[in-house]
Image (cartoon, rainbow, N blue to C red):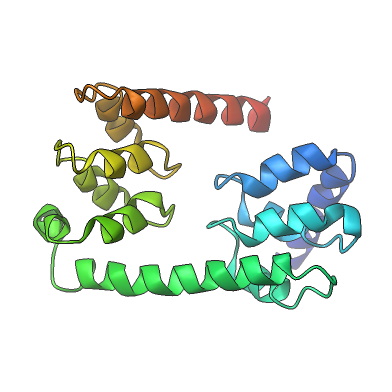
Length: 198
């Protein structure tokens, strides 16, 4: 098991060594990048890799132990440390909110509970890639104008289920932004799959 892990790490390190900074930044920003790749991206402590470490620090998919490491980044520019700290605080806040939703109820009651949340809390769920797919699906049930911004963020969330994206692509509000973002997210997923598996 340990040998396999070490081999995987070596393969990832070798692969990352041949990538441009621009490609590494794209991986660092993408919430679909595997956690072990995100962890490997921060091994390079050079000035040139500072921007990569910064984006990994703000990625919701970055493992907690990698965030801990980034919070102690020794570069004189404090942006990486600050980004890691903000991401840890955001996760803590989100975990408290998700516990409120899941604490007392089964999935079918989540729609009722979400209706009672403030728009700010709904947006926190809509933007977070750790939000359970059933909660993301429930967030878009409200078709009102007031909930348009929430639907917009759900449409751009990489964790939103495909069937919910299909639903958002047919959003009937006169503002077409939700339909466009849903379509773009579907295209982004297709492109990322092509890059990762070609």
